[in-house]
Image 1: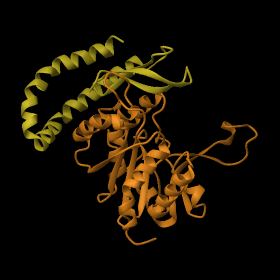
Image 2 (image 1 turned 180 degrees about the horizontal axis):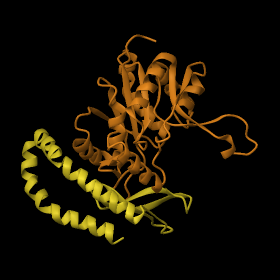
Image 3 (image 1 turned 90 degrees about the vertical axis):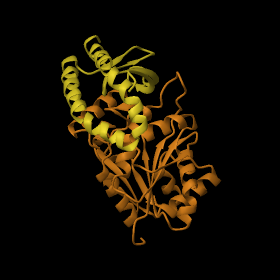
Length: 103
Length: 233
């Protein structure tokens, strides 16, 4: 999943559709920033950290099932991509933690 | 009403397209691990194992749609239709795509849902479809305190949501006539009201959580709702 995405959303400060930058950590939205007025929407820091921990726990606990489903539906492509995905996990999680702690 | 319900589910996702390096149409944004549109689509079709499922997209999003549906909605058989410049035009395109099936009686109810509403539950979709099948049309509505609008307002005010469902033949005819007359409705119900004012449209109690992703705050709310639901629906 992308860590940073831009999308048009309605900015309550500008009161019209503007381009926003959205930052994600894993499945969680960390913040949205209006590129026009810089107004930001984000989770409360403690709330987000707790959410992230719960979410990470959920992702880890459901990973075997998701992996199995992936292998079942597309065995060849999963076998090819699995080593790369596996090796990239620590870096991915480290980047998520940095996004949460460093915002 | 003719016996069994044969439904087509239309999910609208044809906002401004996603071009490489530019902004993403909000329906393709991630929401708790899946794209908003995948969640909308999955909830919409859950109660209807035999439905025809139409996803209306901006042609610029065709490659993205193929990729996302392949990963997140593999179990759903989806027909892709190119949308138009307005919501009305997108609905019209979807109905023209379904026209042969509607005319042959293979589809007798069409349900149209806004792809930016990922939290509508499968129960709501089921209730709307059944009410439309029995009465002619149905939409979800939430009663709003009139004082929120105007302190002198005394009439009852409702906020209308999607999914909206109608009997297929009348809906197709309404959109064909609207195309001929150049009429553009704000939503599905507006077009039906214009051409079939006598078709009974039932207001089903909507869901407060059925938010349309519009503001950045809506994404945060949606994440919380999904977490409370255990990421199911």
